[in-house]
Amino acid sequence: MNCFRNFFILLFFLVFQTISAISADFIGVLGFAIGDIENQKGQKLVNGSKIYFGDTVKVKKQSNAQVLLLDETILTVGEDSEVTINEFIYDSKSKSGKIVSNILSGTVKVMTGHISKNNPEDLEIKIPTGLLGTRGTEFVVIAESKNKSTVVLLGPGPNNSLGMTPGNIEVTDGNLSMNISQPGFFSTITN
Image (cartoon, rainbow, N blue to C red; front, top):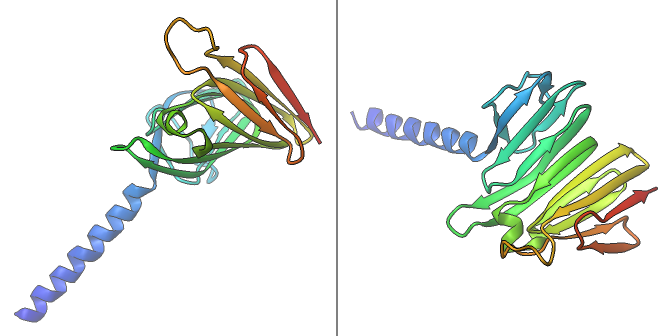
C-alpha cells in the first residue's frame, strides 16, 4: 500500500514538473495574424497562437503579425520578416526581467513594455549589422539585408505633453555607438 502511495506521489511530482516547465516557456501570443505566418518548425500561426521562448515568427509576403509579450512589449512584424525571441525572463510582480530579440530580416516595429521602462539595459535587439538597446520607446527596425539595417525612433520625444519618459535608442555596430533621442531621427548601420 505504501509503495502505491509513493508511486502516485512521484508520478504527481513528475507531471507537475513537466507542466511547470511547459508553461514556463510561454512568453506571449499572436495578437493578430493576417496572411501566411509560421514558426521555425513550419507550424502555421493564427490569431491567438501562443509564442514560446526561442520561437521565430516568420511572416511571408502580403502578411502581417503582431506579437504581444507578457511584459506588454509589442512587436509588429511586417511582410517578408523574421524575428526570434532569444531570451525572455519576466517577473510580473516587480515588472522586471530581460528580453533579447533578434530581428533577422524585414521590418519590425517595437513598442517597449515594462521590462525596458524599468531598466533600459534589459531590452536588447540584435540586428544583422549590430545591436541596439532602448528606453521606454517606440521604434522601427528595417533589416534590408545582412549588410544594411536602419533604425528609426518614433517617440515619444523629450517635449511630449503626456508626461511619458522620452524615448532613447543606443545603436552600435560593435565598434561605434550612437544615441537617437529625437523622434523621426534614424541611423543606418552597414557592414
